[in-house]
Image (tube, rainbow, N blue to C red; front, side):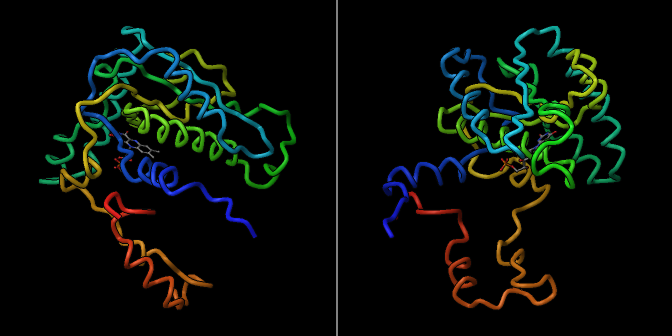
Amino acid sequence: MTNQGFPDEQREGLYRAIRERRDVRSQFLPDPIAPEILARLLQAAHLAPSVGFMQPWDFVVIDSLEIKHAVKALYQQANAAAANNYEGDRAAQYRRLKLEGIVDSPINLCITCDRQRGGPHVLGRNTMLETDLFSTCLAVQNLWLAARAEGIGVGWVSIVEPSLLAQVLKLPEHVYPVAYLCLGYVSEFLPKPELEIAGWRSRLPLEQLLHGNTWTGGIDDDALLAAVRGNQDGAGIKPND
Ligand SMILES: Cc1cc2c(cc1C)N(C[C@H](O)[C@H](O)[C@H](O)COP(=O)(O)O)c1[nH]c(=O)[nH]c(=O)c1N2
């Protein structure tokens, strides 16, 4: 068997993008993104896997201030409702969180899912109908990682009523707005998720999420468990290895 893996430096580059990708809301700079670079990000998204090679995504690129303000208004409405899910200190903490960068970021991008693409029978989608949505999420993640490698921050805003968002963007009825994203260069990429820094929630230990052969049995592979414990800080080679 020949090792088809990447050379160390390239492998580390990929793991670094995975480790250092952040959801960005507060650090956007107004600097424009050059069309060639935006094109690379969209190409990365378009190379995502998809059920039956359905490629259900479309890319709605938004730089109109008018549309951004309309989406921001949807966010404000949905966020006020979401804040009511919490009480006391938690509600106050929720209201302090910045959960979008719609107007601060130079480009907004909605990645949509055309639920009819490929006709009524898409290979692999006969039983799990949501696989078109899953595929679209993979396009989002490809773009998110590529953006990190380009030094561009991405923030996902899901605190909007999807039917109202679809109206603002004039989407056809069978097209679902999976991901409303804010894109732009950033003053910094935070070392940890912003929600973790704000004390909202922290990363779970991976070993707690391993369940071995059955959910109830627990992981019983000592070598795997030891390896996971030895690599708590992130995937792959550490920067100073
Ligand atoms: C489907 C989906 C939807 C949302 C998010 C993510 C995903 C995957 N996230 C970002 C989320 O809070 C963030 O990914 C986690 O807090 C982890 O942080 P990092 O992405 O590692 O920086 C997010 N963030 C935010 O500020 N407003 C939002 O509406 C959403 N919505």
